[in-house]
Image (cartoon, rainbow, N blue to C red; front, side, top):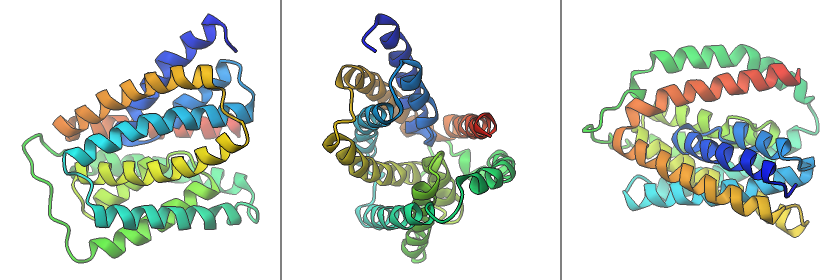
Length: 253
């Protein structure tokens, strides 16, 4: 696990994962397999991945907050909904076979990809101002975060991507504001999960720290691109994440 090969696998892939995750979510589809390829056993890979992704997501969240794209009230609603929904989803996971959701996703993902390609809200130009949220946005954010949180607790992959799409679509938020709220929500759930892995000793720190450094760099570069020109980078990265998720489900099926 401490061989040079392990670091050569983890560092570039964790940079790429951070870059993708900061733009459209879904970085875990790249980072977790990287730790498996590096030779970590499942529980240790999950905890190590959660450590590095939490570090990277923190950087993205701070950048969005400093640039005014995280509205505190909406962020609190999204965080609370995500935590509650995740708790509900994890309980549902004990009642329903994971394979059922996987089969549904094979039908849903192409529809989502078509929606992304046709969605003009994902083509925001650099000079465009963020639309001001109307009075319906708080309760829409509450419902959205609850449902996506439940999906996260039940199944998980692509959570940030789906949250971003619904926040821009149904909630009609601007790309940067939606991305900021998505980061805040993801960070809260990451911290909660990381605490469990740390308490149980399931973080391999040599690779976790190397991965965290790479992930932070990727998140910094990616979030900077969203802040400068969200419309140009978000749509193709979302399509990439959806393709990766589709491939993952097929591979595991």
